[in-house]
Image (cartoon, rainbow, N blue to C red; front, side):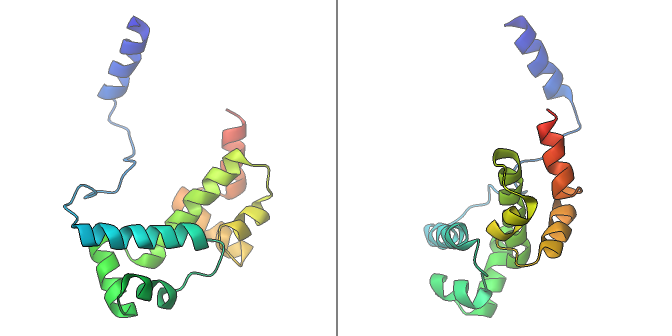
Length: 140
């Protein structure tokens, strides 16, 4: 028990960390906003292998494409395409660790029609290639 407490204390004093949630996540969200955000997230989760377009998702929450872009950026502090690519990369990271699917299969499973674009996006958000990422977790 004392060893565990010592480890927890050492971790609490460490200044080198990465936040798991976006800044401002605790901002007040109305019930209507919560329902819209839930609809958007559900749609993304269910349709990630497909080509998700703004023109498909905006009507789901009762907004025009332009209004949806403004609304989404206001609530998430990033544009929809960036959010979608972050989601796809996070899903790919999970699949790289938990499955034996090839990197190409994972790219297609995550909705990328071009493997080179998948590699670029993965490297952009993770600062390493999908192969390096998988290797770093298989060596643990």
